[in-house]
Every structure is written in structure tokens, then in C-alpha cells.
Length: 394
Image (tube, rainbow, N blue to C red; front, side, top):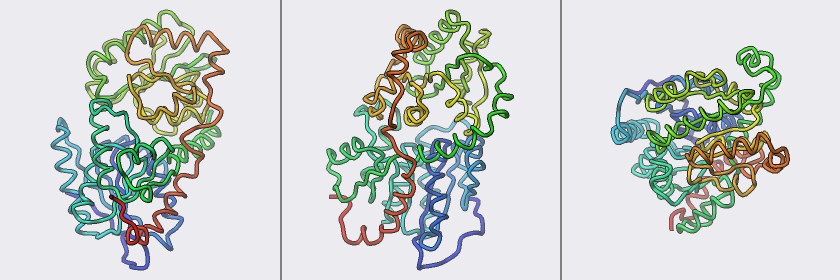
């Protein structure tokens, strides 16, 4: 059942925009778009819909940015399958579209809720705007199910907001009209730059929250991708354990995802090491501070690959493929997979070779300059004319 606030007004002179989000990464990347909508209130009437995958983790971000839901579908239930969630999300969003009759739907990224938002908009013949469009690995199994979600979303998108030129080229190669694609940069950089400036001024708070970091180099770790469940995560933990024994002066901080497929194996494998700190998922500002404080980052996350170059932090990506090859090409990221040997060797190399470390610090972030949200809202304001005058899907 959806929970609605009473803030929606009717004003046909403004573009009514339904903005959907359900996970913490979506909230981070959609927050700049929502805040920019508020700045353009004379032209846009935003309706914010939470689908509800990450209840506590979502609220950490939305509270930080001062975002409230107009509609909360509250869809997450324990143990539901991706298919069950997709069905409930599609039905719930269809009901919201019928009730509020938006001019367009905006969603970000590659979650199942993004796919459902695109399909719901398509079935209602409502324009769908995809933020962070065009990312591809070419492998439907990696990342799973995100690669499928983003491809389906692209099929029903009216306006593709591609973060990079490469992402735009991916869409062109799939036959999307060039008129429907705009390179905007990635909104995660908008959020990051605003947050890191704010949290550097709050350093005393975070130093008190993480006292074990005083005077020590920090390897920050995130690992929670579905395709790494099981053997992949086991090897990642084995690599961390080996490094913890070899590099006793280094603090390994791992904010552990709440998914039982992650937290159970990670705690079982790593809780006995004195320099491995298994901490709860950090609130977004705390995680930004940890990235800024880190020496290097070991991750299987997509968003971290985008954020870290702005902070000058080398990233080792524990995946065999990435839909963000720009970071690899810029030298800021290296694919190490889940091989114990490859992970350990790469970390040791960066921590022991100053020249290699300096080479891996990006000069310019290929994913954006902090102005993506403003570009996207400029495009949204022109959307009615765009949708009327151009065929977005050839």
C-alpha cells in the first residue's frame, strides 16, 4: 500500500515530474536532480516516489539531503525474489502513474525499480527519462541483474541522460536516435563534491567515530555484488585476511552490507583480525569522509568507481568486467577480479610504490564536473517540445 503526503498541488503550467528511487545509490544520485527541481519550481512540479528497497539506508541519504517522499510504496519484504519484487514494483508504480498523471517519469541507474518504472511509464504512454543511461558490460550475467535492467530501461526511454561520451556511444550502437541522447555527466559527482566539502568541515566528528584510523593508512573495502555471492566473496575475504596478516600497520575498514549473503560470510571469515574493522554500513556523509580519508579503495561497487577519481583515490575493482571503463582508461581504477593473488598483489603494489600510486591518481574525473543535475533539468524543461517534435525511439 502506498503512503502519500499531502504536498502535491495541481498547476498545469508546470511540468509534472515523477522521480522514483528505492536504493541508497539511487538516492545519492537522484538527490541533486530533486534539489535542482526545487530550484526550478516555477517550471517543474516534482513528485518524489520511494519504492522502498533499502529502508534504513535510503533514509540515511534522503534525510541528509532534506528529501521527503510524496509517495512511499514500501515494497520491501523479507526474502522476496527479484521477480516478486519486480511484479509488485510495476503494479505499484502503475497505480501511482494513474493517480498523479505525470508528464514524465525520471529514474536513475540499473535497479529492478528502474526497469519497472520504465515499463510502467511505457504502458501508460508517459515519457521516461533515464539518468545514467548507456552503461554496458555486454554480459547479461555481470553485473546481474543490473545489465538486463539497464538494457530494458533503454528500450523504453524518451530522453537518455548519458554520463559520458562512451555511454552515449553505447546507445548509438544499439540504434537509439542521436536526438534522444545527451551527455550530462554523472549526478553522483554533484552529490560527492557538495558532501565532501561539508564533511571536511566536520572532520572532528568522524575522527571520533573512527578512532582506530589515527595515524594509519586506510584501505576502504566495499563488497556486496550478487555475482560475487558465494565463492567470489569467499576469495575476497581470503585476500583481506592475507593482507591483514602481511600489512599490520594498515587499517582495513569494511562497512558490511546488511544482506545476509554478505554479512554472514564476511563476519565468519574476518572477525578475528585485529586490524580488520567490520563496521555497519556508514551513513552517506560518513562514507564520503572515509573515501576522502582512505589511501586506496577496494570495491565491487559501480558508484565508488565514479566517485573516487574526484578524491584522487586509486580503486581496485573486484570484478572481471566494468560498465565504467572510463575509470580504468584514466588510470584511476584497475580490474582485479576476485583472485586472491591479484587482489593482494595490487594492494601491496600501491601501498609500497609511491610512483605507481601517483600514476593512479586521476587528474580529471571522467564522470563529471558537478553540474550534471542542472543540465538534466534544462533538458526536462524542454522535454514536452522534444517529445512532440522528435521520435525518441527509431
